Amino acid sequence: MSSIDERAWFKSSYSGSDGDACIEVAKGTQAIHVRDSKDQLSPELALSPAAWGDFVSYATQG
Image (cartoon, rainbow, N blue to C red):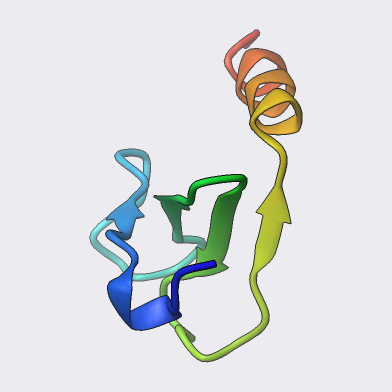
């Protein structure tokens, strides 16, 4: 597993400029990692690619 410093984190395109409610996502070799962009040292979620796909599908259903 890569260390946090080696991951390429991407901020959500839905994040506003106010700095609130932002997440960052990084693709690992076996998991998709999600963290709070305002507190990068806080615990992060590690989701399987299938679980991440299910989440994205659900979240985009309007």
